[in-house]
Image (tube, rainbow, N blue to C red; front, side, top):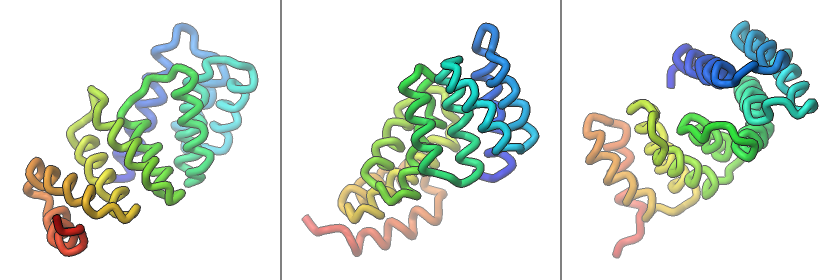
Length: 181
């Protein structure tokens, strides 16, 4: 996903969460404004204040997760996103994709594949995000050494996205790695 587009999506994700709340807490609103200004450390402090006060926990944790994500602290981002899900934030494809990427960074490939798979089951995601998650799921299986599962998923992926040249090359490679039946 391109960086500019990613930032727009993340800002929209936070804004939608805040708008959806009847009377969004000041700390969450302040965090959102700081996030829009790319002041991720300060934004995270505001989201943490909301968490500490027990206000809008799902949205506060989601905001924390996105701030940590932007700072490339994937371990904290993963914890915050999981807390957001545990505290009632909407279970979106975007959050599951971000969780999957966090787990890939932690080399926890089975968990990553689980999150990418679950993200693909969510409605309302763009086709671009669905394709990204499908490819990420394949990458997780491959990184875990499960070449058979990766090959199976990649064959379906290439059938659905035949113009993806990178995937076609990966398919040729995986055919040499996967166990023969």
